[in-house]
Image 1 (cartoon, rainbow, N blue to C red):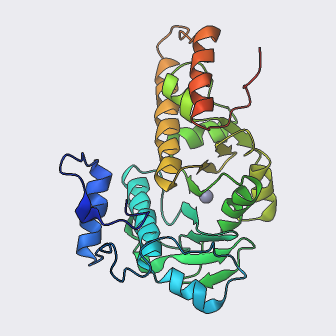
Image 2 (cartoon, rainbow, N blue to C red):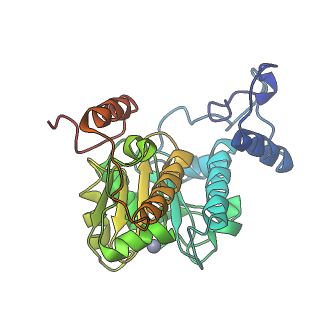
Length: 288
Ligand SMILES: [Zn+2]
């Protein structure tokens, strides 16, 4: 509702609020952002009438960047940053998050800050060539990779990059997590490994982008993980929780002295059907 610029005070009495919805409402209240009352002057609470791009006028971009609508995206990035840090998926100033907010523009995290303690005013607006358009802090140096994913995969509306220890362990060992063990992983994640290149370089982004046609989670060798979502930034973050928990479970299963049981091909087929309906890519569609 908030994303569509609707007034949350019109929530149905029997609405069930998820914990993150409750947090968002609280956050809005704390920051004094009242959603617009329909018919009144609620300028900037809903998506811009026309899709913005790097060619939009500076004043249009600035109005957008300072609008409550954009502020909501900034809050979402802060929220995801807190969750990444809280789960120890990021270390030091590592990790970064981006949300596509126009034809060829994205909102992203700044460089050299802990993802657990970001404020909405820290966020940066960049074009798809990684030029910073707005925001007082300098954009993350790893933004190229996020932008190359968005350029190559038009469905990617948000990207998350972090260094969760178990998944990164697989990436360091060069081992792709085995499949057919846990349904949730099969349905929500399609994982591939990209070879190592220096973080932040165009070569690194290129190697990742080459995989996003058929995969939504990329393990970057000797580095970490990046995921994208066709839904929203929280969904891109969910991939991290799913992958990290999966890698941890696989590690436990591998230490129990038994060959793990696996899901049968017929059972996998069922899961892939669900996955396809959810609009999630997988290189195995159509295979016998
Ligand atoms: Zn990194």
